[in-house]
Image (cartoon, rainbow over all chains, first blue to last red; front, side, top):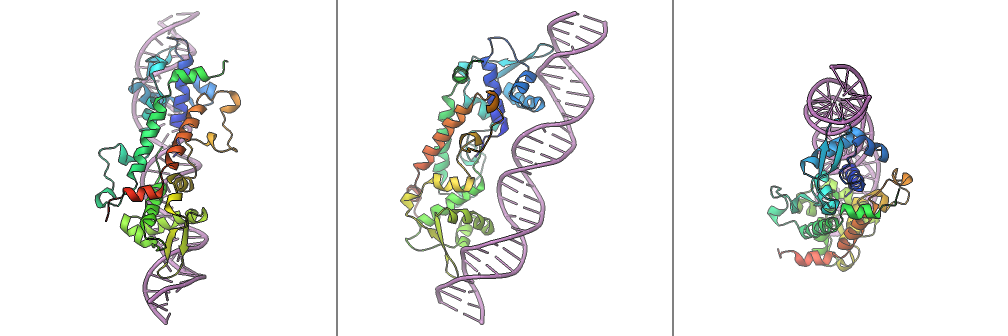
Length: 140
Length: 140
DNA sequence: TTAATTCCTACTAAATTACTTGACTTTCTC
DNA sequence: GAGAAAGTCAAGTAATTTAGTAGGAATTAA
């Protein structure tokens, strides 16, 4: 039940973008250097983030990434959902195609646990906005 | 952010024990057969469960395992904590020995997210008692 | 005595994670 | 127009974790 570096790096990177002046963009190199991350690895995380419409890229020199929506409208749930694949603690509570071997024989006695956990995790993360995280940050 | 089979199998197995008559014990073979689990694998999960004082074993023929406390006093948090190692989504919020590389240079801007998530997960899971799960179960 | 069971140790195949490498494309600046 | 600074794309890979398997020793009810 650990968040992987994908989620951790991605969230930190997007807070960085959110903390930036409006319409200024940051290069992955800058973010990676500042946080001690691998630039190439971070690059891979930005592919799905861009595809999900959370960030926009500017190519070429002096280019980089910026948020594609206001920081108030992007939550930790949005980001982690994209980078971790899903917020659910098991496949059985969010993947319609998943066939639980236990479900067929009435032996799964704990699905309600995963359901409650999923709901709770989703609620918590969707109340956390990037703008909140920027506000928490100590001034540099 | 997925619960592994350790946690899933272990929780299901303990609900099974909780559903059993008081002071009767169940063998791992019975549980494993009923749930389509590997008996040897399940056996490995019961080592830490026993060490944590959640189950007691009876050796020899007609032996097995039973809960070592009433089902009302054992929560999903107790079990998952033991089997998953911890309920925290990152090492930085529960492991005092963990040194976050970001913390030293004030670049970690998201610790509050993991802290809130950890608190939420712990709260949810600690309100779920084995006795609740047994009560939910359809009668066989 | 035998069969059922826990206990214990070791091994292993597959998947996942966290990268690295390198070539290619776009665009700003000089 | 050249060169450098970026994003884009496709592979490869070492280390770790996961989910088991395998097999024997110790214990105990019948």
